[in-house]
Image (cartoon, rainbow, N blue to C red; front, side, top):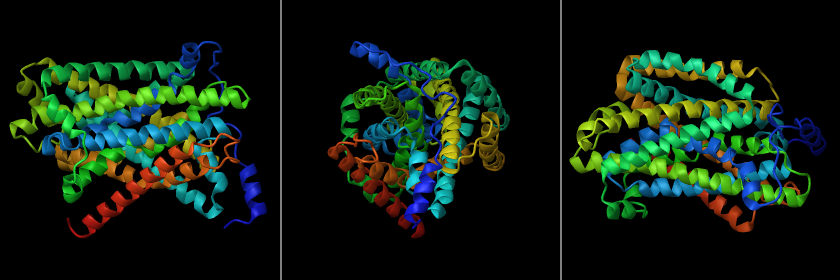
Length: 444
């Protein structure tokens, strides 16, 4: 371990502000509850974007077509996990004035800082990989652009992100909320077309032992958890909540925690609806018709119109996917900046950061697309989500430990029930990861 004196110096080196260019840039209104809440609407939706990115589509489509409504329980459980963990994340940011990367750096021995940073970067690259593939597929479905060309075109999203950031952080939030609304509206209409048996849907939300007994089902369930509870979102939320000009008093911070929690809970409930809707759509349209191998997004698009008897259904599906991919690019860029600045205090221009991250994701996506086609991209999407799940404990454990410390949290620690619940979540994820690794090692 780092000597105490050295640790104090190490902590003192941590930058004072997270995302300094937008820190405290949004005023917080006083007065009535709704007016105060309006000041905090936004960060939760940026976080929710990561919970319905293209990686979720692959795992939910595969799970719904193969196993019907059974894995809805995984969607529900992972969404509840996300709501609790994001509540801890925003509490950390408000109470300490530091994001998760900065706070983790303070408590780590020096020798572990770089490995933790690389793990966090790996999670962001896995996220970006899913976004590259999803956006490219969306461009192909909506505009007919070849997937290979679509993968290359995703590098141009740098211009969109720089334009939004130049307009102000409220513009970033407004665009994300607008695209999220379009995605939700598309799936409301899709549910009408799919016409599922709602009794079966409700039973699907009840956990079943069959999930643990089947390595294939567990692999998809873990992919759903990895696609839903995303490590980069824990870093992201602890930072962007600080874009609000929160007052210095404990009362101000308590109110900010309450308002931020309401914002994120509502936004993540919308994400739960979208994720469940994708799986329900696959189960109602494909599984019930005996089409149990629909894991590729392109196959789902091609089969959807004929299966529900409407030419509009696949168009809405493609539009929602494209909106999801565009949305996700914004949050991944911000998370990458937060992680780099927080762990290693390295600042680079946002466009440089984005191009480097996106280039790392584009290369494997292009190779797989050229060599293996649509099937390869679907398998790469699911694999990227499992990689995210394997990285989760490295973000969850420091978060839960620090938010339980009253001194570190300046008198605003997480309630004991919340700390206990999040410890249980961490243990469940670690156990599931261990079982997955064992199954793979045993050739299952």
